[in-house]
Length: 602
Image 1 (tube, rainbow, N blue to C red):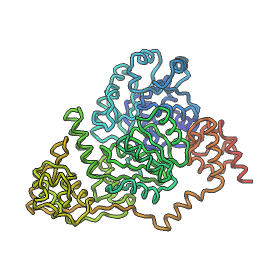
Image 2 (image 1 turned 180 degrees about the horizontal axis):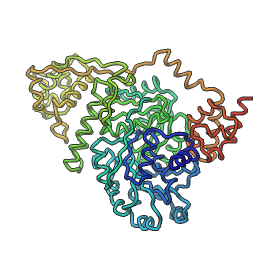
Image 3 (image 1 turned 120 degrees about the horizontal axis):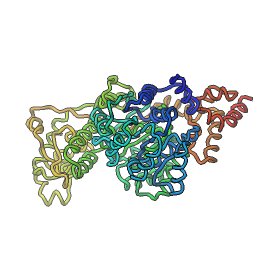
Image 4 (image 1 turned 120 degrees about the vertical axis):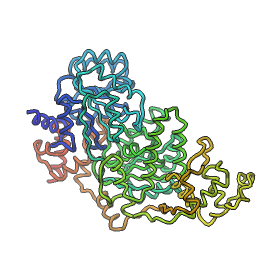
């Protein structure tokens, strides 16, 4: 009986005919009253794992969500599916907050979205004592863990909810958590004998490309033109200043780019987020805060212009591409300065040594992903404890295996130069000495008289940057002073310096592989050769979305429109067979979409 009712809810409310991945098992675990941890990839349907139990159970489900934009998006989406939901957060006026609470008290609401700060505030805690809580869902649960890549203080207090509601099951959900983080999440939340479900971390539709930085704006332009011209994408930068600079540069290149970061006014952030939700072709240049609240399925690329702090961060951010399952790209460039900058940021924080130790390991793993000559997808899967094929055929190292070269002599030149300059200078000065550059800093210290001065003048600065970065990553050199970023030798250096060890490094590659003419032609045909019906349905969807002030994908996503073109439904019963069409969407939109389909056939 339960199974039939769950399938009925899934189809009637959300328009899906079957469960995906571990959804069914996770939902049954929750309904059996078990504390549950669900690890599912971005776009894998995590929200249904608590939304369906919320509709099945008596009472109210509390959803702890980190961002106001995420709450608003979820509530908007649920209302379109005919599900009564509200959020309680600081963006509301007192009047709107009271209206929402009245609805909750009258039993009209099934899901209430709140922030971690809000759920623990005395006012809301007392309010929730007045209602029956059936389930507590904690989204983006990696934030709970002290090892998590988005450390947020109020999340670490959420274990108090188990003391306040001991009989209420908790479901924690995230896309990324390694073994240590999973254990920490369950401990922090005081879960009782939790069920843990881990879906595959593989995103087979995503192509991974990682390159060394030379001229980042030129490389970004070349990447977009070659692979994703006229596509929607996200470009991530580490700082607000860089976001502004890159967004302006892309605009000059005639790309429809907008910035997004916490330093913008609320009005401008809202405007740019609305553009991202509504425009068919838009590029958002943002800090990493952008994206956690985004449910847009047709983001075709995610580009990183700075190295993320961890594999978890990288996986979470790249997972915002291709949520609709269509081919997408995760592209990243990085350089030596990223390694030094992130290391310096870590060492100068107030975090304790235990946290720094784990963070250093995570950064090392992220660097190793960039440096590996093996399949990048296999490396990512292994990091999360999952086995993958030796070659995925869809990352840069598989499509064009890197060339390894004997770097022993060049490595010795760098190590010797660090030693001869008293291990007191950073990478830029070391490379200037090797290349025989003439500047005040070199002449004042008489480094132009050293035997190592100019021993590498026959090779470009980018070459020496690459060698130095790989030596740093492999532990042959270390950063001695975080304040001055000076480099020093390590115990590992000795064997290499004395000739007792040979070293092979990855050869530098800056260029973007061009698509061959046949592939480019097919891509262009697939992108621009869509039939008239799809375009007519798309125009109708966009008009309805603007009338209701909704993102177009909340009305129907492209997968639903493609399904309409394939099935050509003739009546309401057949329209319900379309992917993503439930009873509420049939009632709201069915007549108009069926009319367009009928006109197309006559």
